[in-house]
Length: 78
Image (cartoon, rainbow, N blue to C red; front, side, top):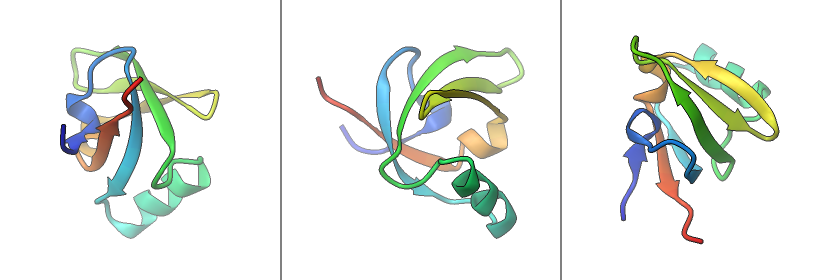
């Protein structure tokens, strides 16, 4: 399976961040929060507005649709 956006990721599956395609201030903020290439990430819940809550390095982050649509992830095979 190829890369998909985090927005398209399924609930409770583990993914790895492959690429972040966002403007500099946002990508730097995500980097400061520990969201870098190679970071494991799990989608915990999805809201009707398109936002989702993801578990990243033991912390839950709420991310909006604009951000999750521009983070490429790859599913981790068990």
